[in-house]
Image 1: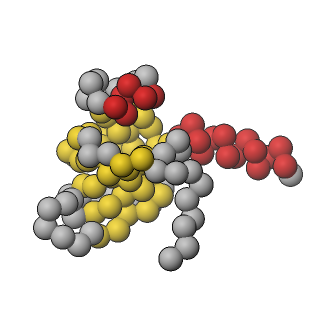
Image 2 (image 1 turned 120 degrees about the horizontal axis):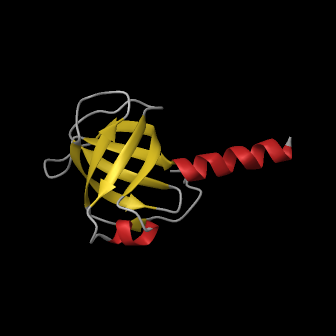
Image 3 (image 1 turned 180 degrees about the horizontal axis):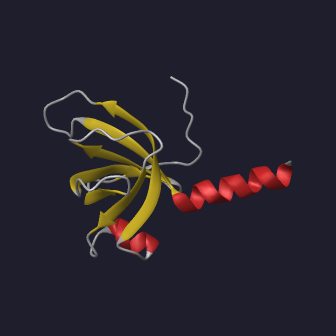
Length: 112
């Protein structure tokens, strides 16, 4: 299997909630499985749509909240796939953080 990751991941099992900008549904209780500088892998029981903007809320005492200095972060769903197993969320979701996506676009525009 080819590793397409830009940054190393750190394992996590912190609870979070997902709010959808394009929907009045939610928030959905979820869990961060792992994270990197630019993204999160989240487990949830609700399928999300690729390209959908989301707000991830953390409890103030969690490592992710302390790491980013906020109780939430904003990002975009990059992928969503069904998961196997009975003890996890039904879907795995990859979220790219908004600040990283903007930084990547700026690099591309300077290179052009």
